[in-house]
Amino acid sequence: RAAEHFLFMFHHMQRKADMAQKHLRRRAVEEITGLSRSTIYDMMSKGLFPRPVKLTGKAVGWPESAVSDWLNSRVSTT
Image 1 (cartoon, helix red, strand yellow):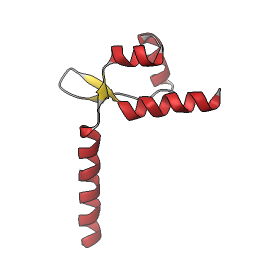
Image 2: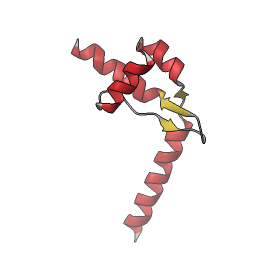
Image 3: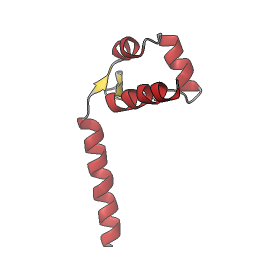
């Protein structure tokens, strides 16, 4: 029972941390990465770029940390 409570609280805190971090809108992602809109979505469909999260009914954003991690992985592989 205590383990279930711990897991529930852990996931709850993780979700709060995800929501607290900065999210980048598509134009900012394009500017930061130098990728076009179509390239971003093409890479996402191939699993090569992070997916955005839903912010509102219509708006999505990429967690800044996910874009930063992706950029860092590109630097280390080139």
